Amino acid sequence: MSRIIIRNARIINEGESFSGSVLINGERIEQVWRGELPDGEATRAEVVDATGKWLLPGCIDDQVHFREPGLTQKGDIGSESRAAVAGGVTTFMDMPNTKPQTTTLPDLEWKLQRAAETSAANYSFFFGGTNTNFEEIGKLDLKRIPGLKLFLGSSTGNMLVDNPETLSLFFGIPDLLIAIHAEKEEIIRRNKAYYVGLYGEDLDITFHPKIRSEEACYASSSEAVELATRLGTHLHILHLSTAKELSLLDNKRPLSEKKITAEACIHHLWFDDRDYAAFGNLIKWNPAVKTQADRDALREAVRLNLIDIIATDHAPHLPAEKEGSCLKAASGGPLVQHSLVAMLELVRQGEFTPEKVVQKMAHQPAELFKIKERGYIRPGYYADLVLVDPHKEWVVSKDNLFYKCGWSPFEGQLFHHTVETTFVNGFPVYRNRIITEGHHGMEVTYLR
Image 1: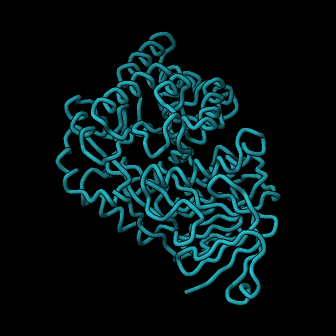
Image 2: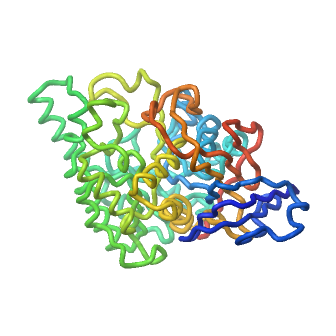
Image 3: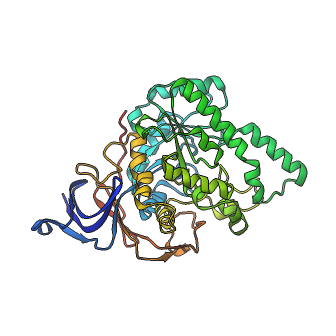
């Protein structure tokens, strides 16, 4: 097995920052040293000089749409996992709204096998709930999935779950995390009819947050929280986008005792509705990017631990699919290559500390989902690590994108941190803008 020492890094881990070195032995971390590397150790392994650089645990993204199968013109597991490791994301959880949807055991097994063949990062896949597939849940090995994804707003195909009896059945399953997309479909339809009635079908992007409004988000989230509280469900609210929804959360309990948890996404922490003028449909997501007050409240919620984790909702579309009115343009965009550097840019602006970023993008995703032996820089854990140069500026351009769709809302953005090397299970799969092809990640194991 290969032995690698990452020497003299600033290690950011478990709420502290210190100078030290890490020994990787094969797939795992064998030793973490504080201060100077002990005499003689450098002769026993390949040494990576990390002087002046930061060493972080690899990011864990709990919400991506890698588009395979059926939508591979936009992206696929191979292409988007390469983008992930180029951005310091070493583990991803993919969503079920593909073609076919991941709503049967054979569909889940197909994705797992495909990822084993093509994914540069570690992988797992949410199972999707529908109004008619409750019996499939009994066939699943819950150690192989992060949870059940339910769409409580409009979604691909028949994945809108709006039957109260079915919802109660799903929410009543012991030891199963329920992750939700929470937007109230009736309110969205009402808002759409109102604005179309006033202005016609050719609505520009500024109407998107009015149609998919704060009211639509809060109504759905609050109903889900009420049901989860009544049934004792672990409810995880994905891509929370409004200040009002924060009232549904608490930060008085440690994460291990929380039954209601929440995620914020990069786009809701970075953009606000003033940015529609410059970016248009490129920043059209569901839920919509909302006001500056919402964005600032979400940032504060991260600082106060009301928000538990930060993810991307990476959802690539072809450029042509992002064109047209706000009723026609596709919702979603590619983000997984730029999530860590975007958060570190907010660190530079004084919004967060590096320790907080690591907590929300590595430690707490591992804890929340009960991922086995990942998310920390600890002896015995898998060596999923990211080496960052905090002094190397770069500008996002089409030439340095790994996304199959070929565009990014961050094009032209100057970032002041560079992901230099990403280790996945001890192997430097990404180094100096080059992917080592043929090295694949591992299926994630969940402790249930």
